[in-house]
Amino acid sequence: MDSAQHVISIEPEKQSLLNKHTEKHFTAGDAVRDIIIGVSDGLTVPFALAAGLSGANATSAIVLTAGIAEVAAGAISMGLGGYLAAKSEADHYDRELRREQEEIVTVPDTEAAEVAEILAEYGIEPHEYGPVVNALRNRPQAWLDFMMKFELGLEKPDPRRALYSALTIAIAYILGGVVPLLPYVFIPNAAEAVVFSVMVTLLALLIFGYAKGSFTGNKPFRSALETTLIGAIASAAAFGLAKAFHS
Image 1 (cartoon, one colour):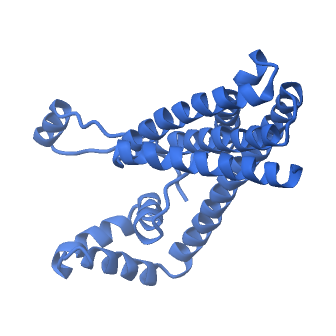
Image 2 (cartoon, one colour; image 1 turned 45 degrees about the horizontal axis):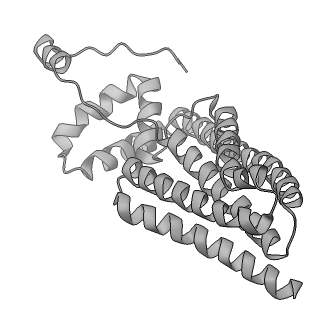
């Protein structure tokens, strides 16, 4: 099947309108999602670990050592998870692409009927969608693209997506994980360091939650409060459990 890119040709008047009009859409959704996953876990998990160890009366050196180990392991684990998720998505797309290619060749009338059904769902009458169906049948690659997008709702993934996702999540996790550990670098007494760790991390969670809400279209202040509350609950639970078992 021809895989060459089709040249888009429209009327000059419409092309002129398109050239004059520029729409601004946010198109970095995957990268932002990976950053949110990495930073969110990076801020919360090491924060809870540090608070728990501080509750068990560990020294700053022990908290810092355990925290660094956790950040390293967490970054690898989260990055690998992101890689496998993106790789699975790409594999799924390839499987469905091959299946659609086979069906267009073996049962073209059935596939054409599916195109008609899809167009009819938009209120297009048979005499209107008939020429469209015929046009697609004469353009196998366009037909295949149409079926992937409108029948299956699948967009072709970036072949580099898996690697980018792994690196983005891992780096974001490390950046988030460094924040709650910083006070333990400068304050030898863990009981004092945990206080500054709480303040710094809660502030970071507020800022991160606000930014996350702004990017995702949610209410920024609500997102900031929810994100901070989750981090506070996790660290408080770890600190309380450590105190309880230690005593």
